[in-house]
Amino acid sequence: MTDGLDETLLHGDLTVVGRIRSASNATFLCEASLEGETVRCVYKPVAGEQPLWDFPDGTLAGREVAAYQISAALGWDIVPHTVLRSGPAGPGMVQLWVEQPEHPAEPGLVDLCPPDRVPAEYFSVLTAYDYSGSEVALVHADRPPLRRMALFDVVVNNADRKGGHILAGVDGGVYGVDHGVSLHVHDKLRTVLWGWAGQAIDDESLSALADLDAQLGDGLESTLREHITDAEIAALRHRIRDLLEDPVMPAPAGRNPLPWPAF
Image (cartoon, rainbow, N blue to C red; front, side, top):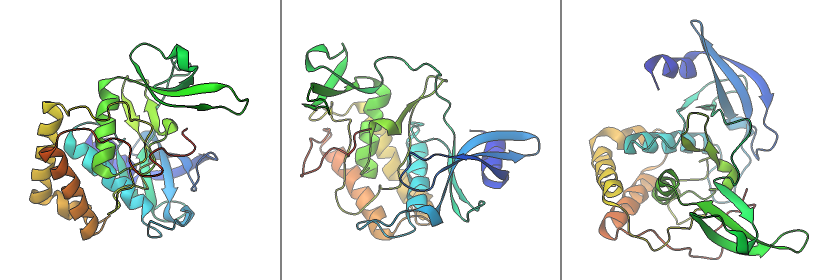
């Protein structure tokens, strides 16, 4: 992301193109324009956030920005560039739009298939029955970008990693969106990316986590404090250090380790 695009997202004129009605909170497709440059983006106003019993009201947009800042600090380019700014419906999160292929690959990065037809280099996460009573498997690809995303979700304590929140971009990148219910002080991890449970975390990822911990002690903590609480930052550091001390991907735990619906 160049400085020019950053300025466009932060300060460009924000024009609503349409509403994304599949989202649970008010979400708009917009165009941000500044000095002849126009970029497509997603705008989620704080005023359109639905109240949740376990997350403080009005904090989801800030959590999305904090998740982006952590992704950027890791150098993993998981979360599209995200800012907090005013818009047509008041302050909210604005995030760079991810262009996806017109004809997506099959199977998708996360998909459903018959249990006896799991594609090569895919993990089967869950076997269940669909609405017609047929047995299906929830699967996801075994690819490095998804593995990093799974680890990122542990770090930010993502409570809602649905298959639909994983986007394959036309640029070849794999991006994660919708991080409004992340960074809670209590364990909330719910994800479809359980394929690496119990596996060792690679050295390159551990190095990135160690660097993230150092950055938190060298200014990033102050940046995050604009969006999450001191207790939530302390919990973030605790999760990072736990991973460094015991470098193994966690296994599903609790009563609801999967988000619902899964897509």
